[in-house]
Amino acid sequence: MQIKGKILYHWPGNGIDESLRYYHSSQLNGDPYDIVVVGAGLVGWLIFATTTRLDVQVFFRVTSILLIFFAAGLVAHGVHEFNEANIIPSVVEHVWDLNPVLDETSGVGQIMKAIFGYNGNPSLTEVVAYVGYWVVVLLALRHRRTRAELVMGQA
Image 1 (cartoon, rainbow, N blue to C red):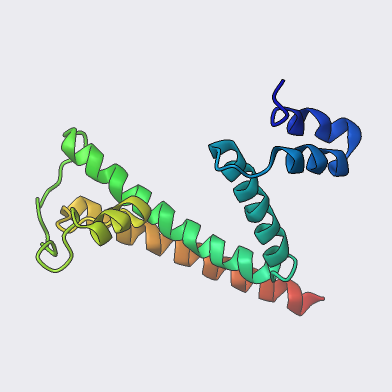
Image 2: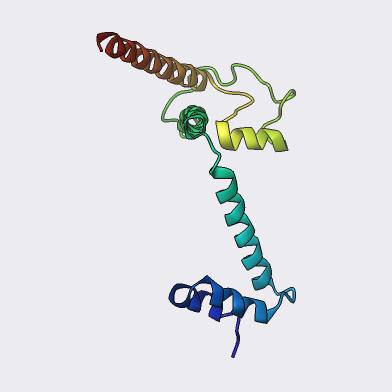
């Protein structure tokens, strides 16, 4: 009978002390399962220890900004795919070519492409869609701010 399998089985019923007793009796002998359990425990503890002091307002402000940038990249990449499928004409094939400076097939270029939709040589419709997205987002944020100021002024 393997004792390692008992860790998760006994955890809900008998509490953490008995689970740790079973785990301690199995010793750390380098099995991948042992490393995963210890690693998961450390990651859980690190997440708990660091998020107790986390300023939630700053966290959500930063993640909201990142999501806006991700969405801009998705819009540009979507238009690029429509260009390749000849659904949307590209009008001008390559408006500029930044691949000699930051190649989209390099490590940094691939990260930028995956996260922000970077394209070293975009078509005109991609540029128009990207700029159009930012115009809409910035107008919406400005409208939201002026509306909030109006509400605060009435109070």
